[in-house]
Length: 228
Ligand code: SG4
Ligand code: ZN
Image 1: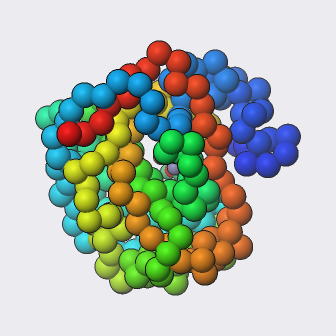
Image 2: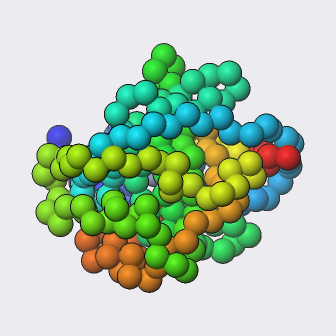
Image 3: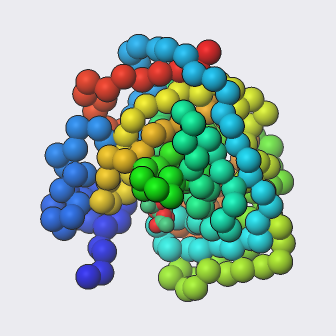
C-alpha cells in the first residue's frame, strides 16, 4: 500500500490518524512527539555515551526529509543498553519547541536497540547563524530527485561533527516517532545547546523538501527529565 501521508493539506498531520488503520496511534496515542520543552519535573542523568565512527556518505531524498544512512558499528549507550545509530535526518522548522520557541531546523539521530527494537532519538536544535561545514558536506550531495536509491559517495562523514560542543545538557522524555505510524517506542534526548545553520542552508533544504515539522503534541501525564 502506498503511504500517502504528507505535511500539507488533507494528508497533513491533523489527518494522519485517519489515513490508515496502522496510523491510529497518531490520533489516539497519549505519549506523542514532538512536545514543547521543558515543563514539569526534573531529575538527573549522566553524560551521553556516544561511540560514532566515520561512515561513507549515503544520502536519500524521500521527499519528506533528507536522510543520511549510517553503516553498522556506531552506538549510543543509555541505561546500560546499546542502541545502534541507523541514520540521521532533518526537519524545518524544528519539531520540538523550547519554552514555546521554535528553532530554524532540527536534526534527528535515530538509534535502535537491535534486540528490543526500541528507539533512542538524539535531537539537535539548529538556529540561524554561521554556515555549518559538516552540514555543507551533506548538502553538497542532496539528491534533487526523490525516491531514488540512496546515493553513495566515498566521502567519509561522522555524525559527531553535527553535534554541539556541549552534549552533557539535554532533556529526556518518552514519546513517539514524529511521523506515521507514530509508534510510542522512542526515548527522546533533546540537546539544549543548538548548532548553527546559515540562511542559505535553510533555503536549500526548503527548496528541495519544504517544511516538514509535526506540530507539538499534548504532554498528558508524562514526566520530563533534565540532565544535571
Ligand atoms: C523521517 O521520515 C525518516 O526518514 C524516517 O526514517 C523516520 O522513521 C521518521 O522520520 C520518524 O523519525 O525521528 N522524526 S523521527 O521520529 O526512523 C524511522 C526512515 O524511514 C522509523 C528510515
Ligand atoms: Zn525526525
